[in-house]
Amino acid sequence: MSALLADARLSVDKRHSGGGYSGFSLPPALDRNLLNMDGAEHSRMRRLAAPAFSRRSAESLRTTVSGISAATFRTLDENACGTVDLLERICVPVPALVIGELLGVPADRYGELRAAATAMVTFDAASKESATRLAGAVTWLAETFTNVVQSKRSEPGDDLISGWVRARDDADILSEDELVSLAFLMMLAGLENAVHLCGNIFAALLTSKDPLGDWSTRRRKITEAANPLPFAIRRFAVENMTIGDHTIPEGDTVLLSLFGADSDPWRDGRPSLMFGRGPHYCLGAQVTDLIVDAVVPELFVRYPHVRLAVPESELEYRSSWRAHGLVTLPVTLAC
Image 1: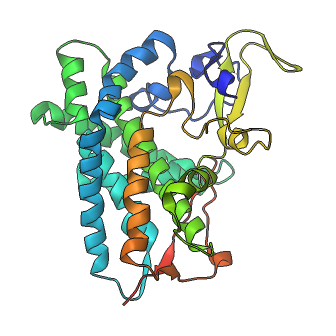
Image 2: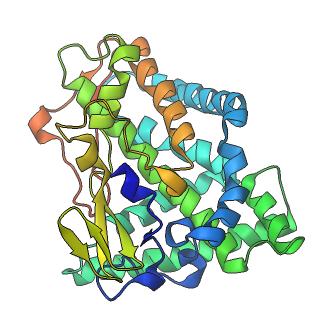
């Protein structure tokens, strides 16, 4: 699987699709992003985004994440009695505020952003109502990120989108659609992944006999098992190719399951693929790790008696083609 993720014969660009499954049909303002680009195009855009997520920026990122996490927990302390939804109170706001600050997206938008993301990843092709929600979400997202970009032109700041606007306007490094699409992808993908990874980890710990234990030694195994992205990511064969005993014609869709690879009983200690491998390795992996380490131990330090407010069997997971995540995570903290 690791080799296939880096195999140049498998493209993420939908233009190589021969008519099979290729994902959503999005407007250009959302579609010209890193998940639909290969080669020089992909490298050009990734170079613009990567510095903010590099190891050299780790200390600055850690400070940002720690400050936002601490402030969010302080608001939770105000409602320490009774039942709270951990997803809404911790798992959503911390990633949203962290990623929003990095990008320069206003904090008051994350509720609507999450609703739009949910409409996309829970789309049901058999439901007219779901299709209507999806269409509305796509329209709103395109308009919102176009407006965010325009606002950065008028009032630039010290954030990623402002930097990308300068790269667009001063150096003509990327197109307007690429600019808007990059902002859309980084916000939505980062929010969706980090929210549900945190929620799944909390659920796993709260249903275990020793909720936190030695987090440093349990972290890797629990995090991999809680990976919210167990479903396949798509690639397109750019030429006829053979994988094992299977011949794949040019243009066919190939689905790669990262969760399946990590769950392989013959994995034999190979590194996790939950964040991918090769040129499309997740840019936000470091930020996600920092968020997990900021919120997971802190919950159990602040609330050593925290417990689920409902039986484990009553935890509700949403129906999604993309990410395995909870609808809510009701817990009782302490009084």
